[in-house]
Image (cartoon, rainbow, N blue to C red; front, side):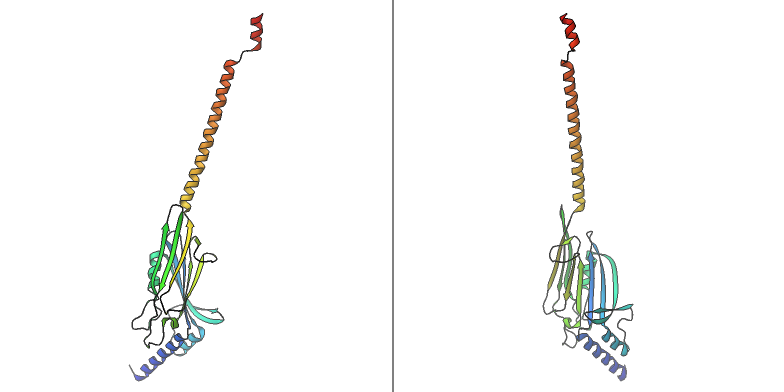
Amino acid sequence: MSRVARVAKIAVTALILVLISTGCMRAEFVIELNEDGTGTLSNVFAMTEEAYNLFLENGTDPFEDYTTDKKVIDGVSYVYYTGDLGKMTFKEIEEELLEFIPDTDSDDPIPLFKDVSIKKKASLFKNEYRFKMVTNKDAVTDNETMSASELMTVLVSVKMPGKVISHKVNDNVVNITIDEYSEEKTYEIVSTSSNTLVIGILVLLLFFLIIAVVVVVVIVVVLKKKKDAKVQDSTYTPAAEETDQEL
């Protein structure tokens, strides 16, 4: 590599480190979980437009392989791209999140998440869902001056099935911002839903039971009326016959 090339590479690397250290990058994970054990996962990676333009001025497009768009967040303009991974199982979503590494420049990169688990516990009348993630303690970059918290802000949006009982939220969506990694942190979301299949079957059985009881009651009433009518017929003597016999 020529000296000019080496200098250019060092300059670009320095620029990257400076930009990253100012918190110009954001990563967003949008997760929606379904009652059947599947879900969807999409991710958004964004960089401030100012930082993105500085990369372009230095001949580097960090998003060159993606279709980008712009949006304003808290008054700051960002350039971003979205990746939609489509429908996945709970297990596949876990694996995808566990692979995310915010500090790819480190010699020994540490994933953002130490553990991710998505569990469904089914009972006769109720299903319980738990989304749990544990962040790793800080990862240090090559220059040993920047931590993972300085690399980017990570936002995780999780839409749970049923009703969220662990947080006060609207539309069952819990938004979590991860921007501090000095120690391991655990985030857990719990929701519940009724076991509609079992409840539906029980309602149907109850309906048929009520119908059966009504039918039995009707039959009993009809038979009783017939029996009473026969008793009346057997004890009845016409008045005319009684008069003739007396004469």
